[in-house]
Image (cartoon, rainbow, N blue to C red; front, side, top):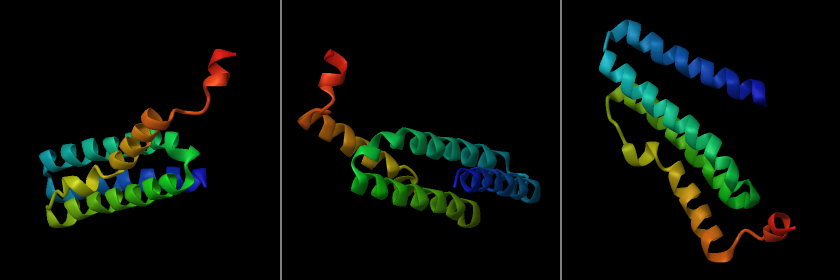
Length: 111
C-alpha cells in the first residue's frame, strides 16, 4: 500500500512537470506544486483523525477529491479552492470534537 502511495505521488509530480514542458507556464506549475504540497500536508496531518474511523474515511475521500481537483486545474484552468482544501474540514471537525469532548488519553499523560 505504501508503495502505491509513493508511486501515485511520483506520477503526479511527473504529470505536473510534463504539463509544464508542454505549456511552459511557470505560474501554473508553481501554483500546482504549492497546492500539491498543501494536499500532501493535509494527508499527513489527517492521520490524527484515525481514532474516529468514519471521520478518517471521510478525510480520505476528501483527499481524493482534492487530488482530482488538482487535475481539473491542470486540464481546465479552473481552480476550485473549496475542493482543494476540503480535507482541512475533517481535521477541523476532529479538533473541535477533541476540544469539546476531550481526548480520553489524559491518564497516559498524567501517569
